[in-house]
Length: 390
Ligand code: ADP
Ligand code: MG
Image: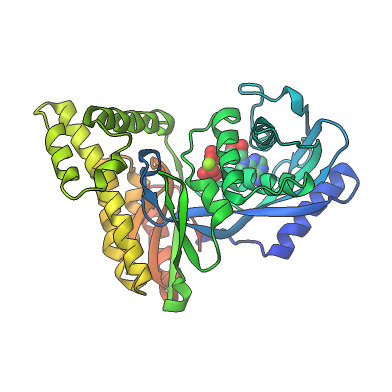
């Protein structure tokens, strides 16, 4: 029995958030605002290197029912735990003062105020069908839904790029979660039928046609439901290695090495100093530079209407993340290999790694067969069954 995590339709999501609001606060909200989770097609561990990534929005969204107040209080409740209502004064919100999920909510108000905007107190009820902690960015779906709500009730008239930046600050500085900007851009800046090419050097975006259904295909997301304790430390270590390499090579970010043909090869030759540490540095940097090139090739294929030809790029991205960047894990490798063996056009881990989710591009009519094959492979490997998202 495969487990599918279905998306709510817009009306259901709105109604659920309204119901939590009414039960908790005994009134109707001013409105309901929502933002989606995302999955990254390609371009992994490139964001903090000023590189390129290519997320798509999921149909799964987080809904925020919100009503403005006349004082400085924020009352917050989530459908995930509807009996626990958090309450705090917004004036007291600062880095290190808010723990738990409410940091993603109060943090947005804090970030907007930090820019000098006038944000009122509020009551908010959250409900969501985005899987939490699966690398599908439930955190940005949450902060971005709240940003849209506060922008509307405060009549702030901020554009979406500015709101995305506020949500990044909320996650980094109030929730204490390192995040490079992809999740928030995906939640606020995608348009239907398109992936979002995000240039993390200047946060500019381009909308690239992506419509698997039109090609008889489907994007299967496999939530491994695995989380390994390594995540935070390994993320910080990869980031530090990249920053050290960039400094040693005299560039601001590794991305700068992709601007001029030949620079990438020269950089790798420079880093290969014959020591074991040098060899590791070469592999890390090689992943980042090759992955940025793969994003460019992937986008060129999509823009040429050749979605069916992207499979090898997905496979190469996985191999690079597994062998050069060393951020895969057994669950992700099993998911990817089983999906391919069952006929996927290509598959790879997505997100930071060490657990989280994998994606597979599959024929639409083979969706359930591939999912069943992945499920069986997990059982055979003695792993807890995964969950599936389309
Ligand atoms: P991801 O963003 O990949 O799902 P994160 O660890 O970045 O994983 O974010 C998960 C956190 O976001 C949760 O631990 C919780 O604090 C918060 N969160 C997300 N969605 C909700 C929700 N619907 N209700 C309450 N908290 C949520
Ligand atoms: Mg997150």
